[in-house]
Amino acid sequence: MTMLPHSFTMIATIIIVLVQTLVGVSSLLQTDKISTLPGQPKVKFHQYSGYITVDDQHQRALFYYFVEAEKDPTSKPLILWLNGGPGCSSIGVGAFVEHGPFRPGDHNVLVKNHYSWNRVANVLYLESPAGVGFSYSSNTSFYNLVTDEITARDNLVFLQRWFTQFPEYSNNDFFITGESYAGHYVPQLAQLIVQSKTNFNLKGIAIGNPLMEFDTDLNSKAEFFWSHGLISDSTYNLFTRVCNYSTIRRQMIQGNLTDVCATINKLVFTEVSDYIDQYDVTLDVCLSSVNQQAYVLNQMQETQKIDVCVDDKAVTYLNRKDVQDALHAKLIGVSKWSTCSRVLHYDRRNLEIATISILGSLVNSRIRVLVYSGDQDSVIPLINTRSLVNGLAKEIGLNTTVPYTTWFEGKQVAGWTQVYGDILSYATIRGASHEAPFTQPKRSLRLVKAFLERKPLPSVV
Image (cartoon, rainbow, N blue to C red):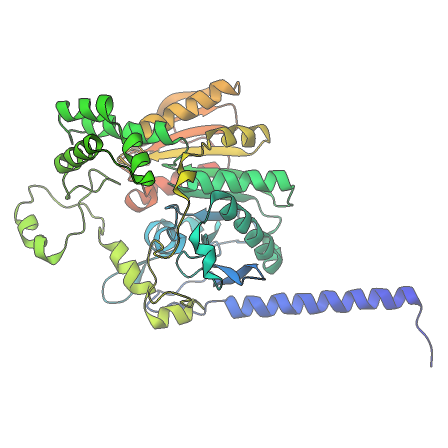
């Protein structure tokens, strides 16, 4: 019997291992591939969903939903999208309400979203941390106290293992995006990627209506309410001079809300009323059937063409057994899927971690940064977000290259923007809510497309 040279044997072994690995990855891809979602219109792009284990010992797994770009996915950028909360679902909100390919409609069907972000990119939606949506930890003690640090670490492990499963996207331009408390998630994950020198092709981050500095962001609520006529002059004075909103929230977190702050807080929200959506002060609200008739009879203007009950429809859709089967999803430790976690105990002290400085370190690492604001949001208003970005630019020595000016989508003003150097930019989306792609989908798509392509926003009609 002829003996093969040792080097040839080694090469053959390596080839066999590689083939086995590729076969394993291919098998996983086929397992996670979605044939079709119940009630969805016919599409040509591929969809995947499933679990990536981020802690083998404690069986902690994060659930993802991935939609390839409508055309030429191999050449398009890859976007990771993270919703905030902390503890709210990127799939239930980002994918099925904001900018995914479908939205739940009436009669148990999905309708095509014509302004889906997968028109310009491959989009990866992640339910994070474990305990959110379909993501889970078999060791439920994990839920007792989750922090920003844990979330960033698990998200990094998720990405490392996801790229192993989808290696064809490892060289695509990679962007991390999100909104609200993702003002923590996104920059912290990007910073960890840079610090760990992980070989991702990270090009930039984009965060919408982000929490970046607790006192600054929360205390702008008073001016926003007052300037929009939602509270009186006297209440505005109390809300700024006697007990401001960051103080109220801090006391609530610590469980020691004082009588004077409780009184002012009640006064503020009595004047604002239950019939105003704080995430979009101009948007109608989804009302219960008890109040619906009286409310409709008192309407004096035409209702906007926005399905304000789409959140409820998304919850109903994602709790259907046939939908969960199609998504390869399972309920672990919970009886029902919910938009925001009911089992996760997030360390609320983390809300006070300032992340604006992390944006500066990312800029210094040549990672492009876009911060944007839906201008009708009172939860994280544009007022101080804009000031924070402007202050950061001055602090790190970036000159304004595009002065504060209008930008257009079609023939209408879509918002205002300011650019610093070639790497940091701020933009508002006119008429948009906290969830900007939901209320202004066309303008939001135009903004993200320009950012991905590194092109200026249109400044003329």
